[in-house]
Amino acid sequence: MIDDSHGLAVKCSGAVSVPGIRTWTSKEWSGTRAPWLTARRIRGPRPGAPARPPEFRMPSNRSSLLADRTGRPPRGRDPRRGERRPVRHTQVRTSYRGASSGPRNGRNVDPARRAAIDAFDVTTSAFPALGVPDRVVRLLGIDGIVAPTPVQTAVIPDAIAGRDVLGRARTGSGKTLAFGLPILTRLAGARSRPNHPRALVVVPTRELAVQVTSAVEPLAAALGLRMVTVYGGTPYDRQIRRLSQGVDIVVATPGRLDDLVRRGLCRLDHVEIVALDEADHLCDLGFYPVVSELLAATPPDGQRLLLSATLDGDVDRLVRRHLTDPARHEIDPGRGSVAEMDHHVIVVEAHARFDVTTRLVRANPRSIVFTRTKYGATRLADDLRNVGVPAVDLHGDLSQRVRERNLDTFRTGRAHVVVATDVAARGIHVGGVGLVVHFDPAGEPKSYLHRSGRTARAGASGAVVTVATPGQARSMEGLHKRAGVDAKRVDPRSIDGPLTTTALAEAPAMPAMAPARGGAARSRRGALRGPDRGDGTRRDGDRRRGRRLPR
Image (tube, helix red, strand yellow):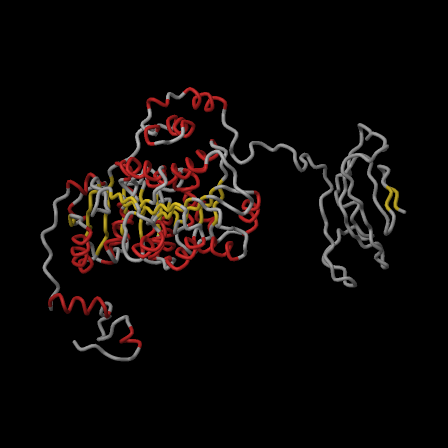
């Protein structure tokens, strides 16, 4: 037996009892025989134990109970049993299971805000005329949302009436609330069974799933509805636990949702309404078979809402197969861009692209820069930080935690620039973006329009700049024409001072560029083969196969 100065009794292979103190299990060497020293965990004072003396203090050396005869704390594994000996701090916990640790689920509302919600006059809002519940109207009203956008005015009445809806509208037009408000209206007043959601919102990217949830969840909580966001790149545990507790609305990306459905953890036979946001992008990413299978797993008499900035490709197949007599709404038909945008092409040599981009983002601190590859995004963000420009990157190789952290860094102003691949070109709404820079030119009109749509949102103005070499600038002429964009070519050397959007708008336009020598056909061949390296070979498969191109 070892007698401690504070009355502790320790026996080999026995128990440690400390009046009024909870201790943790530990195992320890004792001499060469190494018997086990075991401590029993006690929650609070034992019944009948004497009160702790006021002058009682635990030894300052926390390992005094855990030391062997040499005075060293235990390490490693026991060679005879091969198991780890946990060493934990002996301390008093200040919180217990079930103890309140602040607001839960974010549903506690500030009393002043609650009073403002209750006092809001719903007659000053146009949403009640669309069939939106008064409680939701008040929440929208105190945030300054009293007039619906054109797409909301067109879609919400038909959706609340129970019709399938096929909607097309430009980016930043308010499509999230256009399908979110009808979902809330339909589900209000009932609860869902565990693992049986009643509404499903399918989106192409994790960032868009988070954005939809952040926009709709406060309104859902006001109606007593619960939501969960389901996407890949994060652990299953929390998502499975939320589904088992019963949620009304699931906002999900197709891959993770399909996985949970196949495991039987999310059943779709009670789904009353399904919304597909950015449906064309879902199909572009190859999710058409998964999305079609998910829709087929929902009740055939359920309601379907399909909204996107463009409706083409496999979207028509989804419409024909899964929508019944849909109400069609097109806002700004034939246009995917915003009229308030100013489009420019800065023509520079390849070696000057980074310097010009640095001048642009320094003069316009709320900017998004697009690159073609993930590695290019990371490298450009590092280069900008090295010259003193706060920048973060955003692409698919980053974990979801890092992507959310980087977006939050940009939203809060700690970073002035986001360097992204096309992962951020769809559905990511970051307010106050005044400039979009195509560091690597877009390859098709749709990609150009969706990249450019990160600025000039919700009626605001913005500028779009493509940093291009002379050869790229020639190819951009056809792309701009197909996208319905009138872009001005600018020589940065003609601008003295910062490259602000105002300076670009006032700069003289460059004269029309002469076509490449050899005609359009040769230009197309060169584009396919890759740039000439100067030794008769090119950076493509012809060089890898050892063939030389004719001069």
